[in-house]
Structures are given as C-alpha cells and as structure tokens.
Length: 448
Image 1: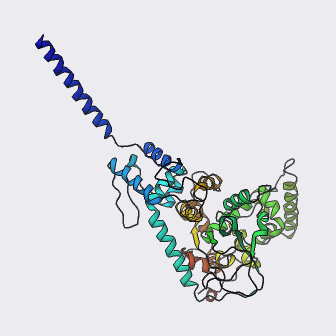
Image 2: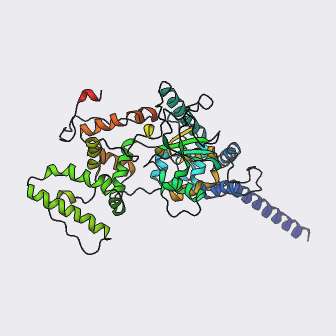
Image 3: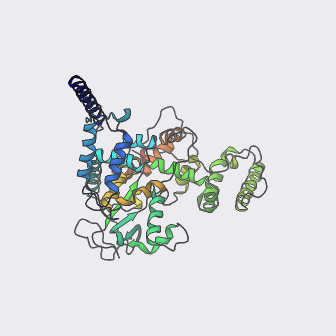
C-alpha cells in the first residue's frame, strides 16, 4: 500500500508541476495587436476607469501621459523595442507592423480610431513640437506684416462661441468635414450643408482696430474672449487639383458654369480650333451640353468628334490655372490660405496641415476639447476620387507633369506666402518643359 500511495503522490506532483509550467508559459505569450487595441480602447471608453479621470465627457481631454505609459507597458510585456530614428519615427515589432508616419497611415488606410490613437499616443510629443514650431515660424515671419485697415470688413472666420473656438475654412483642405460637423452641432434644423447656414457667425473687424491683449491681432465683433482660432491648410497645387476634380461632377458643372467653368473651357481650348465655322458649331454644342446636364441627362447626348470643348466634357487643371491667370479672378476655392484667412490681421492659435492628418487632426481635436468626436471626423472625411491604384502622391505628380514652366512659375508666385509660411516646397521648373502656353505672358523678372 505504501508503494502504491507513494507512486500516486509522485504522479500527482508531476501533474501539478507540468500544469504550473504550462500556465507560466501561457502567461508570458505576447499580447496580440487586437488584444492591445482592446485594452487601449477599453481604457478610453469606460467612464469609471481610474486611468481616464475625465470620464469621457464631450469637451474633455484624456490623460495622455497615463495612456501613453499604458501603451509602453504593453509594448514592454510583449518584448517590443521602440527606438527613435534620425527621422523622428519609431520602429515596432507588433505583428511585424512598423510605426508609420502620417502619409503612410493615409496610404495604408489605417482609419480605425484605435489604430490612430495608438500611433498618436506614441508620436504626440513629436506632433506637438512640429505644430508649435510652425506657429512660431508663422508669427515670426508675419511680425513685420502691416494689417490692412478696411472698416467692418467681413472675414471668413466663424465664431463658435458655445465651443470656445473660431474657425476659418480653407476650401479644398478638408473644410467640408468641419462645415458638416459645425452645422450638425449648431443648426439642428438645417436644410442643407451650405456654409450659408453659418453666415450669422461670420466675424467682422472692429472699427477701432484695437488689439486684443496686444498679440491677438485685430479685434473682432461678437467673438468671445479666449476663443481658440484655427484653420487647416494644404499644398496650393493639391488644392487646385482637388477643385478641378470636384468641378468635373455634374452638380458642380451646373453650379459653377457661369462662375468660371464655361468661360475657362471656351477661352482655353479655342486655340485648338482652326475653322471659324467649326468654332461656332462646337460652342453651340457646348451650350447644349449644359442644357442636357440640367435636364438630368434625359436621352442621349452625342458629342461631335473633334469638339475640343467637350473633349473632355469638364474642366481640367490646365483650364482652371489658365483661367485664373488670364482673368485674375478671385475665388475662395483657390485663394491663398494666408490671404483668405487674413493671417496678417488675425492671429491664430493652431494651423494644421491636411497632409499631416490624422495625427495633427488628433492633436487639434484634443486642444479644442473635441476628443470624443474624433470618430465623426474619420466617418465624414472626404474620400479622394482617384483612378484605381493611384495615391494622392501619384495624382499630384501626374498633374504636376501636365503643367508647363509658365504655369509652375505662376503657382509659385501666386501662392508665395503659403509656401513660405507653411513650409511647402515650391514647384520646380523643368528645363525640358516648353513655355508653350499662349495665354500666359511669361516675364521672368516678375517672378524672381
């Protein structure tokens, strides 16, 4: 009996030891990406979580230092290494994923809030430093700028006093997303998402031009003291490309026909027609095409072969740029951001770049107290309508190659302040591109 009992005792001990080893091994298995994401999002969503003292209230900002420590602790448990590189980025071994910069995040469509949150927590100090240095550069560059004294001039700066902020929409720089957000928040009975729904909030410069605290620029009627002023900017050529692409839609063709589209196409393409008779026939067909668009494409519209006004039947970047050069037309969709938002007259707190979203957007939402609404901005973000397998960079380069040196030089001159203030690289003039645009009087001395 003693031998049998002793054997059973030894067998039991072996089983217990094996179970202990197995459980210990499982305990040290690295957390998966989804597990870490669940932990992170859980910490952000639970109101009673001691790591999130604000409880997720709409206008609160999370305790990023605690959340960042949480992320780093998880990285440490799973055996990750995050080392700063000369470029300011980090490398990570989670699921063989590398820590990405903003452009790569957009390219790989990391649109899930939890994914972007994690990237932001790791790079927040870098993002904050970049925006701070940009604002210091803008303030220093504009220190000698003399404000224009136009009494009671309305400016495209909208007061959102209820939310303690003021916003300047730079068109083709994500302004539609912000416009829809503010209209939904402030005009519950709105009939459309037209910016006119916010017209009553448009600020005006005061008569006395008194300075607000000596550093806020010209005082504005009806703006609450302490409002955080902000805007979003974008590379000037990208804005022009985006506007030309948007103008190709039927609804925009109809809306902007008389504003600029019809004139831009007719004036820019008529040089390609040799016969006066053909020119008149093509122009009449071009006008009929707009009537057909207004009829909501009833029936079939046959385009005469060789009608350059309808090949293609919408404006392209060449039409747009030559129209602005030829007419010196003013329009908010292509106005320089510096001039449009009156940076010389009005001091801003935050200016972020569309190209640096979503990380700079995350920082802005944190500073404005809109952290809890960040998912709405992803949901409403404009989707770039590009040909298949083409990135924003591909579209930019393809359109850039279509411009001759006269047009490139004009872009550099017209948007000079935006290039300097926001750190964008000017368009390069290519020796192999002929200056063959008859509508642009090219005087090199005017640009340098």
